[in-house]
Structures are given as C-alpha cells and as structure tokens.
Length: 206
Image 1 (spheres, rainbow, N blue to C red):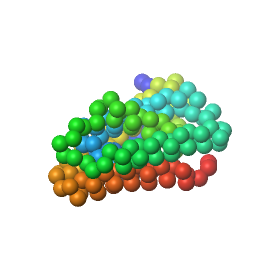
Image 2 (cartoon, helix red, strand yellow; image 1 turned 90 degrees about the vertical axis):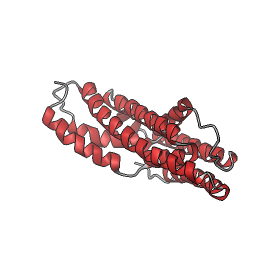
Image 3 (spheres, rainbow, N blue to C red; image 1 turned 90 degrees about the horizontal axis):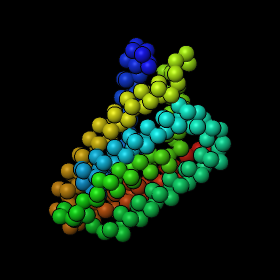
Image 4 (cartoon, helix red, strand yellow; image 1 turned 135 degrees about the vertical axis):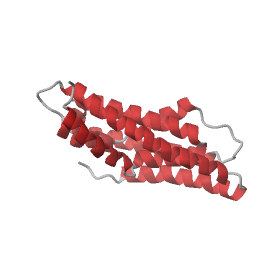
C-alpha cells in the first residue's frame, strides 16, 4: 500500500482538526461568499484545494524545501500574495454595494482567485513541510505518500471552506436586499481581503 493504514487513520483526525481551524483560506471563502454568493465561494474553495495539492506535490518532489531554504524566495511569494489580496480588496471596493440581483462571479474566475491566493501564501509551504513529513515513511515512495495526505487535506478543506462560503453567500444575498446593508457587505468583503493582506505582510520571517 502507498501509506500504512494505521498512519492514515491517525492523519485523518489531525487533518480535520487543522481544516476546522479558522485561517486565511476559510476567511477568503467567507469574504468571497459574502460578496459574490454561494457558487463562487464553492468554486474558490475548490481552487484553494487545487493550490494545496500543488504545494503538496512540490513538497514531495523536494521543491518546497528548496524554496523554504531561501528566505528571499519566501519573501517574494509573500509580497506577491499581499499585492494580490490588496488588488482583490480594491476590486471589492470599486464594485460598490452588493446587489441581490447582480450577476454572480463566474466559477472559473472564483476558482482561479482561490488557487492564486493559496499558491501565494508562503505559510502553506511551511505548513506542508512541517506537518506532512511527520506521517511519511522514508522506506516507502515519498511523493505518493505526500499526494495521499495532501488529498485528505484538500478534500477536508474543500468541504469545510466551501460550507463556510455557502453559508456566507446565503447570508450575503439576504442582507443585500437592504441598500444600507448592501453597502456594508462590500466594505466587509474588502476589509476581509485587506486584513488577510496585512496578516501576510506581517508574517515573521522563518
């Protein structure tokens, strides 16, 4: 087998606990759900999971460790992520009040935004390198093990982040019926993106 069954059984609850911990991915789906509705939030959650699988694959191939060994590389990724989140915040502000009858963001665009946000978060690189290898058996093929564990994380994250986005999307559509609250929703969504950018900018160097 690719991984030891008992090790996988130990990994699943640990991964679920991590998926349930509020973080940047969950907050991003929350903000996008409030702004654009349930379907874009679900697509963004899928994009985040896809980005996670890219990180896991890079870790299994040893590329993530090579990047993590150079603080400058992590800084470049971090500041690209900050710039992208600020760009999303600016876009939310420019769009003005959320309108209940407005056309929802396309699933492809939401997927892309979720994936890019995840890929440009160096915390994910460091997390994968710190967490997943604890469950990897060096006597077995390394990359397949990373992919199995990454798939568990990705599926759990997709379900949980997607559920948060769907809830936020339903709430946002109901609140958008009020012009005053519609203006507030746009500001809240932009504020979430800006807060995520600030958190990433203030991330201590590892």
